[in-house]
Length: 276
Image (cartoon, rainbow, N blue to C red; front, side, top):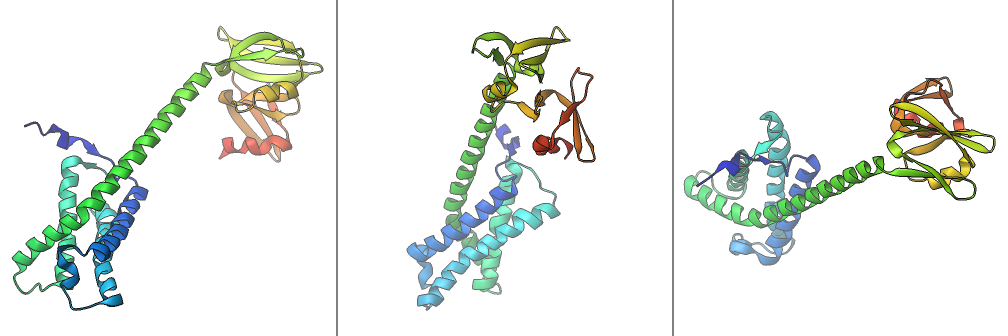
């Protein structure tokens, strides 16, 4: 039998937030399950009733959650278990179940009596009680992480597609005059009734004049990497190489262009992120 899969990484509980979800679900599920169904005749283990019985049954879930809180945070940090392989995590899970069983014995049982027998039954009941919420939570975390990975992949593909997308520039009459790859566009500069479009072609900076206003073009470039930085300029943030703050003034350096591009105070907040 091939057990190589045991050497694969187990990453489902690497994130702290996912570990908190596990602990919360185990506590809530155990509290509800034990009080509603009273498995293993647990309700008859003591001659109590009412609120006392509710608190006792709820305490089993609370104790289990506390032990998981300890093993998933301080204990992992002490033993430097930041990441697991499947085989080491199964061992870690067994340690967690054993610790919970020991705590149950010392809190609710008689550790001085038949310890081995009590420990065996405690592990059995603990495993049966935690198995369902544990598996359910791990599946939920797997689904959540898998969905996030797919979303990130889609965003990556979308970004790659955006970088290869052609931007078409129209004149004041709405006629397309030329198109430029978004990744090659550098700068738009307003000059009277024209807009100068700077872009890279054959590793050289090219400039084309377009009869239109910067305001009209800005509307057509919404939700892209080309944003307004001044009443006379729009820059492609993908090609901003340097941002300098001098007092209250900001200046940009765009790839392959020698001149500094000013950022007016109205638009400065959009570019301060480059400095953080």
